[in-house]
Structures are given as structure tokens and as C-alpha cells.
Length: 115
Length: 116
Image (cartoon, rainbow over all chains, first blue to last red; front, side):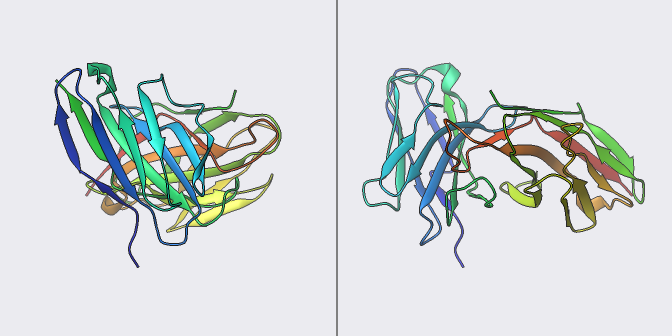
């Protein structure tokens, strides 16, 4: 079956611009997670959705970052006034159930470069 | 807060050599522990997991045992292959604010290169 997909695969933008990154989770997965992976580091948690609601956004670095999941499926991560420090690979993952023992299925990521 | 520390890499081995990648963690309560792998050009995928103390996760010849007394989850393989070349991430999923919903905390990753 189809896995988690993310678009675009690469995004180059100028400092100060607005970007949107899209995640299509596996059909039927209720839990959705966003992570950010900087070069040479492990992924870092950004936000978790259970259904349509953001149950935990404690990982968002500041108020320039926002994410939505309006119909409980596709999610969009939005970054305003991008900065060079936002350059990273943004990963989306989904899971059939929320819970600490369940596998998360990761998408291929969106590589964001802010020039 | 929760944290995961992996042995620093990169690790370079010859085919059929033994592999150990060390992983230790800090967490409250009883987290679940995972090894994820990222092959060249591919996304992160689960390699193995263990959800309680003394459990052993295994897959593709890799093993790791959840050791609560040493807060460790070392990854081992008796004979590596060229196809095992990848980046390996240790991760945990603990409890946040009394609830558990699967948020992963990752180590920094270990690059493994296996030569023929």
C-alpha cells in the first residue's frame, strides 16, 4: 500500500519568505507527527496531531511555525518569515494509534533550504 | 527531559565483522525503545523495538535488549553485510505530562559503512 508522502521533496526559498510543507499520511492513521532533522543530527519532535487537533505542539521552535490538519488526514506545516536557521529536512510520520509502543511510518522528508 | 545518547561514529567494518552500536537513555517511567534505520536514498524505517524491560527486539539479524538497570539498548549483529551500510538511530518513546502518545526522542545517529 501507499506509504507516507511529502511534497515538495526539495524547497529552496529566500530568507523572509513563507513556505508550506505538505504531508499525506497512510490512510486510516489517526496519529501524525512532524519532526525536523538538521545535518548530522537525529530528528527532533515538532508537533503531534491526534485526528484534527494538535495535541502537543511543544516542539515548535517559535511562533513562526504553525501546522494544521483540518480533516484529520493531510497535514501542512507552515513557516512564516523563514530564516537561514530553518534549513533542515522536515519529516512527517504517521501511526495507526497513538501510544509509546507503536511504530511510526516516516515519509521521505522535505529538504528546506533558506538562502 | 527524555534523552538518548548513541556512540559516536562513523563506524567502518569489513563484511562478516561483528557490530555493536551503543545506546543509553534517560527517561522517567518505562519508555519503549526503538532502533530506526535510514538506508542511502530512503526514508527512516523501523528496524526493531522493545516495549518493556528485558525484552529483546530482533530483525534482519540485528538484536537489541532493553536493559533497565543500565538504561541501555545496544544494537548488535554477529556478521554484517555490505547492504547493512546505513545510518542507525536509537530512539525512545516515553510519557509526556502523564500521557503517552508516541512522541519519539532520537539519538544523533551512527553512520555504518561495511566494506566487501
